[in-house]
Length: 503
Image: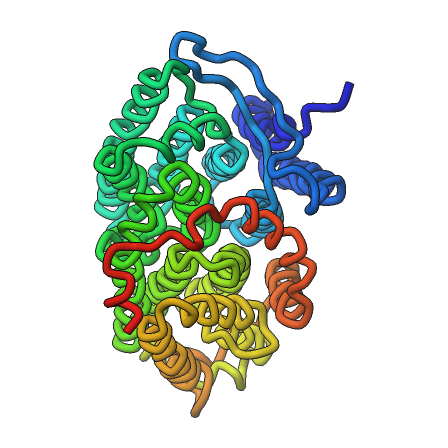
């Protein structure tokens, strides 16, 4: 009998969190948390090694009855898309624990702090694994709990308001999604087979009345659009980015928010193919607006953390654009972008966070000449920044390239407008770097320390991944492409208004 690898995967950080809260010596909390995060990474590595990219769509399936009355079960499995995001999560969490080694003020609060990170990792992992719609909904909502406390308890000024806004926005989306989950079950029950198993529902919901399918699609899509976030549902994100600790901001934007875009691929497109095609022009329009809007607002920011947050809004616009153009290039690019954006954002935020912790301010105007006193910090910040503007040779470039190619096939106007973000991103990244790192050394920056060994341990693997995936993306695309070919069910479906949008 084979081991239940998927259960072991998501339970490892959960057990780690419980262990942290019960160990008699709080000073060991950081090391215990790191060991459990590395254990999760090892399990993810085993899954990646044993996964057959050309095999069946879902692999390592585990299925057990949970609530038979409603046809709900503990059903988990992974495809190539989920595997890519699982590996991303497993790689980033130990890096975040090391990066936040001294964030908590005491050993007692430190173990709670790291336990919350591990709980968030566990819930995110299970959301990528779930093949039961109710199970997915439960963990989708449960993820809010550790993040609320990470923002509200361990953040900086304005953390309470940011945490409440984050919670309210996402609870609202979750409430709408709950109604859609109930509707999906009712639809399956009316077809004579009440179930919440995604694999069975795909056949049932795709044949539903178009009006019902549209309503159910919106129930899922609104929740995912808030989580991602898609313009205009993005307004909670900048506050979280500036009020939370840098590692919480990375956990949010690089890992947790990917559950939203993942949900669009797995649930919206597969369960509601006709509705996805119907709303495609609207969503593509919102995504393009978000791409340009995020880039323009990033240019005008005076707060370095807020600037990085707006770049993520622009990047999520790219990801959602690639998903809903419904071409293999677009969706492969979007999935790869989820991974590359996570690495790029983590590098940019953590390096900026190291600088802010030294200087004590997030204002860009307070810096200047940093490259003369901290050349390694400035150099790694430059690489991370260049990856954010998708410089060729760095990981995000091939992602944006694939998305733009996939978009141009059906929506050339949208592709051209989205391409303007490439110029805008060069403006906000290079201008930020020039003001912060170039020029004469500003008063107060002359004694800034360069990156210390612990920070180099954090930054080095991120920079290495940006370079490796930039030069050799095949290692990820070989897993992603077959999964996209399984998942895409709407490539050739006509959408209302498509001809208008394509002109």
